[in-house]
Length: 242
Image (cartoon, rainbow, N blue to C red):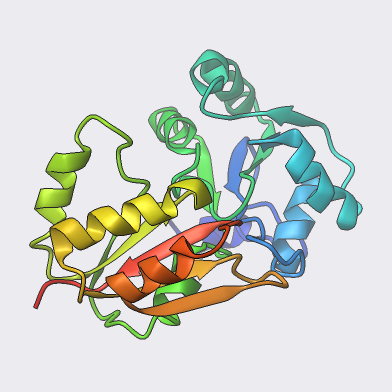
């Protein structure tokens, strides 16, 4: 790309990079509504359409920042059905922003299919930097972060045991997402496959009023949460095998 083209695609004072359709992936706060960038809000106010994993959840954020734009659902249950229609609109020059309920689109949330289709059709895609739950959980865990693997949500049934056996020999720090109702069960399984003395950190409700970071061995953290009712979004960070 020539210097002139580069300048045209980064026009000062405009959130858009040149003419034509554009898909923006907008990280949304994982809890505290203040954790969104000025540029993200500017783009949300400027696009033709906002795609939201849950329009009710995203509306809270949009109303807070006085964003008044058309909004349509885009989630794992309809993304295949509306993929062609969205791609056609983007190819025709529409600008869209994709929001998930919390964090960066594509990280254990819908985005991949639309991004891949945009790339196939030479439609510009840009992912803004911003909130992702596993990053603060990993950094404040106290475990080595020079090398790590992100596993997201483990399989619920098929392939779960195979995955556990494979991860038991993983030497890097491991990061998982989990639901509050399955946390204790998953920690119990980790003890079975990784050993009860393996160190971990469970981060709950990051950036929110009742944020909690429980650190210790898998046994200690398991016992801590087994003695209480668990609520909120969960990130589990587990030490790799030595």
